[in-house]
Length: 283
Image 1 (cartoon, rainbow, N blue to C red):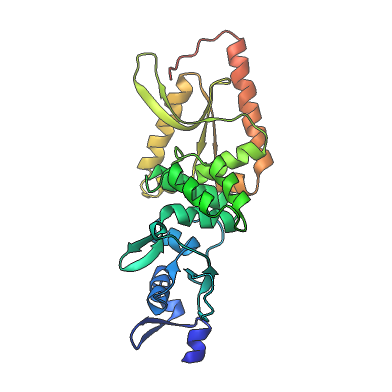
Image 2: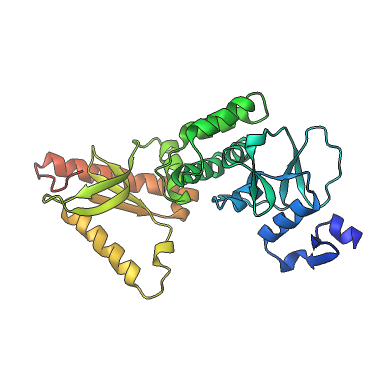
C-alpha cells in the first residue's frame, strides 16, 4: 500500500480510507492531496480547477501544491512547488488552502504556455474573480522569480472581454498571423437601433465580423440552437456585413487557412465599401 501511495496508484481520501486513482476524479485527488499534506497550498493548474477557471493545454499529471521554500519534505504523489506565499495569496475553499485567483494565474503564467496563461487570466478578469491591480501586485512580489517575464507578457496580452478560452486563444493567433487587431464583443444594431447581435470579433475598417465557434452552443441535440445561430448570422449578413467563423481546429492546426479566409473577407468588405453601397448597420 505504501508503494501504491508513493506511485500515485492509490489515493488517501481520509483517515485509513483509500481509493484507486483511476476510480476518482482529478478534483478529488487534489482535495485528498491537500488533506494529506496540510502544510501545502493547492496551486498552479490544480488551483485553476478549484477556482473553476479554464485550463487550455496539458492537464497536470499530479496534484500541484506549493510548500515553504526551505521545505525538505518528500511529498509523494504530488507535484510540489517550493515558493513563498503571502497571507493574502491564500484562500480557503471547501476547507482546503488554495492560492488566490491572482496568485494562481501568475503562477500558471510563469510556468505554462502563453495560451494557457492568457485564457486563465481572461476568464478570471471576466468573472470578476480578480482585478488587474491584484495581478500586478503578485507580479511585483515575484519580480525576480523564474518565468516572471513570460507572466508579465501574458498579462499584457490579456483582455477580460473574452467570453471563452477559444476567443482568448483566437486573439493570440490573430496577432501571431499579423492580422489587424479586432474589436472584441461589439454590439451590432440595424438602422432602426434594434440589436441584431454581439459579435466575438469585429473589424470596422472592413465591415467584417468573426465568430470563434466552439460548437458547445449546439449541444442541445435538437437543432434549435443551430437554427438560432443561423438566423443570427443571416441577420448580420443582411445588413451587409461579411462574416468568418472558425473553431479549435483552425487556431491550433490550420492557422494559415484561417488567415487566408480572413484576408479574403477583408477584401470583400473593402470592395463593398468601394462600390458605394451604404452600410446598413450601426455600432
